[in-house]
Image (cartoon, rainbow, N blue to C red; front, side, top):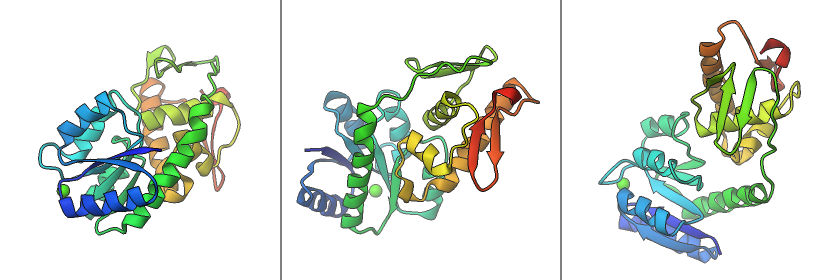
Amino acid sequence: MPHILIVEDEAAIADTLVFALQGEGFTTTWLNLAEAALEYQQRTPADLLILDVGLPDISGFEACKRLRRFSEVPVIFLTARDAEIDRVVGLEIGADDYVVKPFSPREVAARVRAILKRMAPRAAEPIPVADPGGPFRVDAERVQIHYREQLLVLTRHEFRLLQALLAQPERVFAREQLLDALGVPADAGYERNIDSHIKSLRAKLRQVAADAEPIQTHRGLGYSYSPKSA
Ligand code: CA
């Protein structure tokens, strides 16, 4: 039975989530502070975190960044404002999904189910470890990619994207196939964010080699890795 850790300082909101999730057969733990949740997750890892952005001690964003230093557990953010949404769907935070308050607890439970379902086969099936040769060197264990002998400083999503592209040179990946590589549910409205990740990835590659274009855009189709242009 999956265990969901709810981090929310408003008891009324936490209560509705606990009720909805338990009704779906999940085990739940509710904490109202981010620091306590991080400690808890280190001791007793939950299967998924629901994390409020506005918490009394540190923000949900900061908490997620700290969490990502030791855990890849899926995170759903609870956000209150449009300004927060921009950051949640931004690149650096490493969230898997978000819901905007006020929300329907059933909707949250459905997202939890969708993410856990998406995660399950991924755990059984390791990401292919491919060393593409050429200018890229992928070290899956260390979660590192070198390009022309330089270590790329990548976010988790950028690493996964580049790893997926490099594993199959010249294959054109549709955005939803790349979402798959990220473990993000394709129905969560994240497809356009692939473009942002690619943009930021390209900027990092360009810092190493200004005139190379290893990631090619195929209009209306998606992206591919082209060794010829690397
Ligand atoms: Ca709050």
